[in-house]
Length: 416
Image 1 (tube, rainbow, N blue to C red):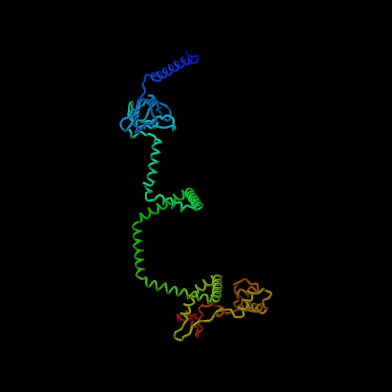
Image 2 (cartoon, helix red, strand yellow):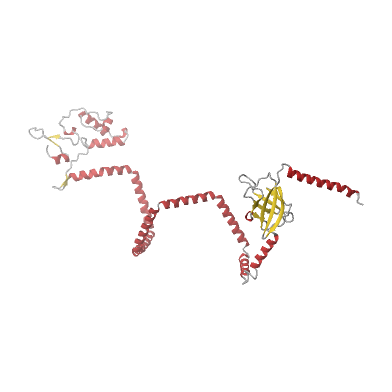
């Protein structure tokens, strides 16, 4: 006889079954729309059975209805919620959550607009994928090992030699290898940090090459001219070689000369530095000399008398002033008033009393304004009162009034 526990379990099982059936019927009949179906073709369907989940973005939307082998492919019929829209170009992927759990079919990608997958549509083999099985991985590894084994690449010991050579090269070079990898890492980090500069250099190089391409004709002409120059130099290579040999000899002689006369050259350079310093300090004077020298040479040329072989000049440097007045004027300029000799003051008083020409320095001794007209009784015809170069009346007998110019210009012009 069944025990109390068994009698209690039977009603629970029957009730659970009824609830599942009612829930399933509610899902199918909740809006009167049957689930949609889709057929996908896989090259294999390991771990996929009727009742396996059909998911979109990992959410269960339906289940596998049937798994039917068809030659070298497997046909998987699936049903899914009619409220779920699947894109027309959807793919079917068999996803293994883990090694031991059941697999499910993922419809991807999620619908984002456009055409929708029709009811009872088929997904061809090109849009399906199945995971690689562990046996396939083992088989691939076995094939790889056989390829590298004694019946494959290592038939003549090539692989063994490669391994031995690699071991010999790497043995004892662990630190070097570490330093190399560390340097490579630093170099890559530097390149990464300076990628903007690197890209900028590449962009500038691209602009440069573009400019060269646009100036192709000029570049070709330059290359042609360069080729002509090279050809000319090649034709005169003997002369160039001789010139270089002579230059080498000359440089050796110059080096010897400089070494033997080092002290003299040093003193000469120092003296030259002094001369250049003087020229710099006397720059204005040099400029004045260069301005006046051409006129002086022209006057010298005009003063030369080819008939007598002499220079026809009139020495009137001091003009209407006497030498004593010039000497006193210099002393007034250079000495304090108390140190000027008394004779200079007496000379100034004499010239003032007689109304003779006086320099501004002598006027300064008598506290007279500069350039003031002299008072006194010189006659208007006194030659001392005339400025240098002014025409002097000719005092020829008879008082003809003919004037003559005693300067070089007047002599050359003659009597006017």
